[in-house]
Length: 229
Ligand code: SAM
Figure: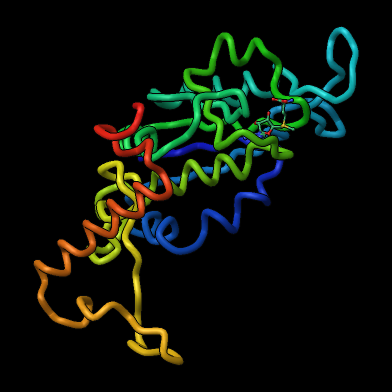
């Protein structure tokens, strides 16, 4: 899989995509992640990629030409399954969408900035718009890193067995059960006995019950047969 992220702030993406599972997935060649500096696609001597909004008003707009050139260059080199724009008004990112995107081969993520990108890019080049939540961040770099991390950890082989993504929250529409580690007794705060019993099947049942109870308590709408979905 290949993920190309177009950004005006490459530095913001360096750390989040160079540690832990994402780093290991890159080392195992399960994914190639390229950070593309939008400023490499402008002829402006100050390397600026923003301009005033037609019609006036506060804030600058990401210019159409550098973004067009960056996307067209990538498209001339390979086919893309999705060209994603991160946007607060996009479809809400969730585990189902992460699962879908993890099955793709080539993805571009355009991280927006300023007041956003010239609408014509969205109208003519973008295939999908994704929001990571109902709040506004300064730029699309953290959303792009969030989306990339959520996708990459689902690629088969990215996680070791004991970290398996299948036991994470939202797979099977359930929240994950509580987890504990040593010591079994910390200042009198005890780990549930069942987890120390060694009975694998009983432990599995207990975890499933805990998942259901937690989901019912915190996110009842996920339990489709009981919620309103
Ligand atoms: N004027 C835009 C609006 O009100 O929808 C917000 C622009 S925001 C300051 C700059 C960029 O950050 C956006 O173009 C988008 O790429 C990114 N961004 C901000 N919040 C986001 C969110 N919740 N999800 C995805 N991207 C976001």
